[in-house]
Amino acid sequence: MLLRCADLTLKGWNMARLIGSLGLLCAASLLIPGCGRGNVSRSCDAPFPAPDAQLPTIPYGVESRAITWENKTGAKGAGGMEREGRKGSPAIMNIKNGETVTLMDVDGPGVIRHIWITISDRSPAALRNMILRMYWDNNEVPSVEVPLGDFFGTAHGRAVPLSSAYVTATLARGFNCYFPMPFATHAKITVTNDMPDDKTLGAFFFQIDYELHPSLPPNTGYFHARFNRQNPTVLKDDYVVLDRAEGPGYFLGCVIGVRALGPHWWGEGEMKFYLDGDTDYPTICGTGTEDYFCAAWGMDLYQTPWHGCTLNLTNEHFRFPLVSMYRWHEKDPVYFRESLRAEIQQIGYGEKGLFERSDDWCSVAYWYQLKPTTYRAPFPDRAARTADILDPPATKPAR
Image (tube, rainbow, N blue to C red; front, side, top):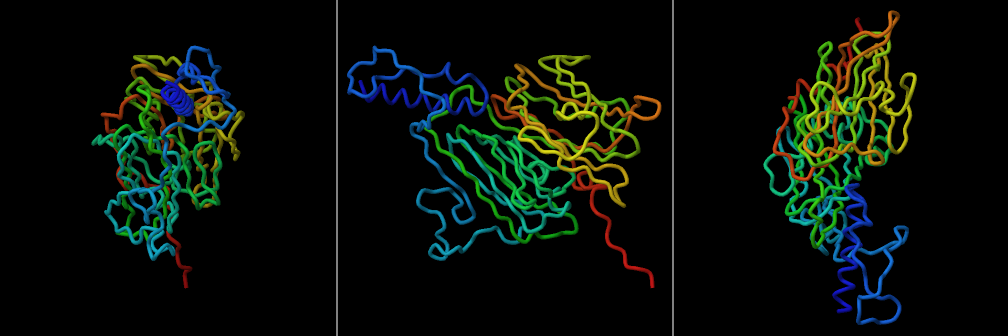
């Protein structure tokens, strides 16, 4: 009885820890009362206080694994075996144009905790056209379908330093994400080279750190991310950040990029969340674009764990701002029971006050839902992804 009760206690602690990390439920509500502590006890009748959330509790039955190109399956005791452990195959070399490489293909239950990637070419053409896709539980529809650079937090294919709660770009070279990504039976991650000019990617380094679990709670959400771009937007038609999310679930955040196509302030548009059948008007509506990203009175460069602006660029080629912003909702998730549609207006402010604008907008939406998606949104092709964001080719001086 003692062993059985202790086993249930540890399972309860682990369940609470996982649910809490995903922000789905109050962890305390899932704790299972434990047996006596200190002295050996044969009874579970005595009440036992819930474990202190500040203590480093050890989850029951969880095993850590990592996948690299040297250990493609994450097998136990099989890391770094190439060249007898002397760094024989640290990267995928020469991913040809049009080629798809599988980074992860493992059975569950499990949870991906961290993904690190760096590539030899970090130009806008590469970061916007190396495409990440993730599939959960053998679902044929990818739950994640996003250009690599946008997935790791910066729009327009620009590699800039970024430090936030969920994604980082260390030194603008090392891309990391810390979204918990649970899978019940299977996880598959691929990368596809869709760069222009039939270009081969020289080197792709990566590591995927994950856990194997005995089981997952029945209300565990699946991670999703979706890319969109509209160049240019349509006057008075709100830009769609996310549509047809299938509840129950919650919106975790987004990365939004704007390429302004004219002068004056571009960011008076309001962020709108249409929840569970909302039609003409949303349940949640903000006060302005920079306000949604937790700034005020315009936009400039800043970074915090939960919101920031990593790019606010003007130069000879981009006469009007090229902007990239992120916003994470871990502290204030937007829950939905049946459906969610997230949109943002394109409204500016100029000499005559508010006016409707048409600019170039792109985005990545991140959310969790109870089941892997059955809807595959239209994915912009290479021409649509890269139009007007690549640096112009250098011109030779006239003789």
